[in-house]
Image 1 (cartoon, rainbow, N blue to C red):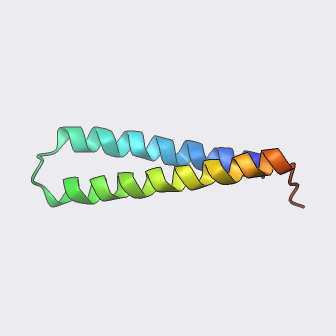
Image 2: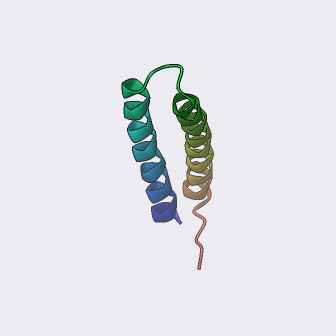
Image 3: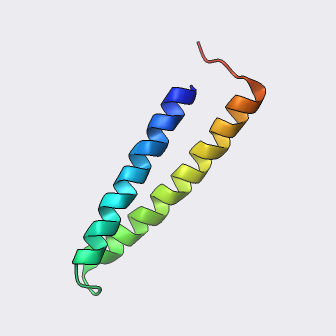
Length: 65
């Protein structure tokens, strides 16, 4: 479970990095810019939840079979 959550966190962070780069290279007023910004916010929220779940899994030593 820990490995799965860590992978999801890593994937989301990579996507945030990619989208951030795209946002920096596109005009501010483009529709893609705003879509990417929304996607970044959504991914940041996902990371926060994954990290909270990971913390709980570690604290309570939860094993998934």
